[in-house]
Amino acid sequence: MAEVDRGMDVADMKRLLTKSKTEPVNVAVGQDGKNAVMMLHKIKQGKAVSKELETKFKDLKNPRWGTAFVDIDDDPKLVILTLNRAASGMGAKLKKTLKGTGFSKVRIQLEDGTIAEDVGEEDEEEEGQGQAQARAPEETAGPNGATQPTDQTQPADQGALVQRLTELVKSAKPVLQNDPSRAGEIKDLAGTAQAAVKSGDAQAATQALDALENALSTGGGQATGSTDSAQQTSNAPAPNAAVLQKSRTAWVAARQRIEVEIGKLHEAMSKHYDGHGFAADLDKVFQSKIEPILTTLDQSLASKLDEVGKNSDPGQHQKLVGEAQQIIGRYESFLSSDPLIPQLDKNPFVPLQIQKTLTATLEALKKSVR
Image 1 (cartoon, rainbow, N blue to C red):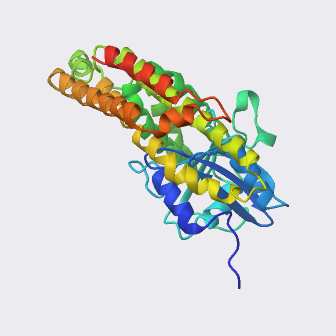
Image 2 (spheres, rainbow, N blue to C red; image 1 turned 135 degrees about the vertical axis):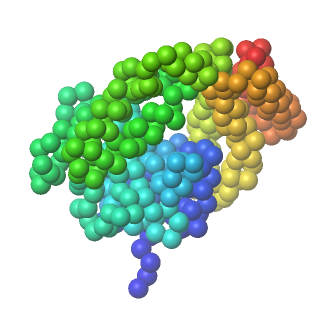
């Protein structure tokens, strides 16, 4: 029996998902008959990948696009898909699509962080499974996008727990924006709450949700008493944490802007060379020439700035700052020496400002990272 087309070669799928451990890749998914298909791309934007998937599968239903990410520190087997819209039951089908890649769990979430579907190793892979998972399909979204359960066999309180979890996850965003150092704490509490809700144990789920809500509303749920001030002092982030967080955000934003522009260039060149015989090789050219640029100008600076901001040891502060400055210097050296970057900026298809944008950003970061 011929193997079902999953959207792309399994080896390529595994390779790109493995790379997503350090940086998300763009993804498009959909349903072809009873099967889910997936296509990943390092450079093409998600919407463009979705169009390519629709071209390949003429009867494709429920096309969705976004990014794919594997958090190797949290769960190296879990593929997190952040999609533009939810699609009921897609997660269970995508789990089948991932067979052979080494990734055996699928989480589908929306751009606002709402969990639409969570399919683990223990879940059955038959179509229709996963209905008891936390999900928020667009056709059943409640007020303010809150999740409403679609499985009528769930007890009423289970739906309320799912909705409460969704609202708490959404409310965590501004808390973490104000204090990024609490990411680990909030992530652990949210994970415990999600597992408890998923288990169906209402009492355990309520307790876990209470703990998460308390942490979000009170600032951490630390034990009260005379030791509070000492704990807060020992766990205090760097005194310039807000500046460091802004620096991190600036680098991530600048890099994302470059990725978007390169994606537009790829799309423009694909249209220009369509029918010329060169289009088939264009992806290979981009992979071999462009990807090394994005790989070199990676997310290590963002990670290091995050580490500096969370650091509570004054003795380590300057050491971490020095490491961040070394990364900035490495980026600047690459930008000034790589011969392809000026050629990309001068391309006749889409105006780019890779060198100008990143050089200016790095120059500003050198002054602010202290």
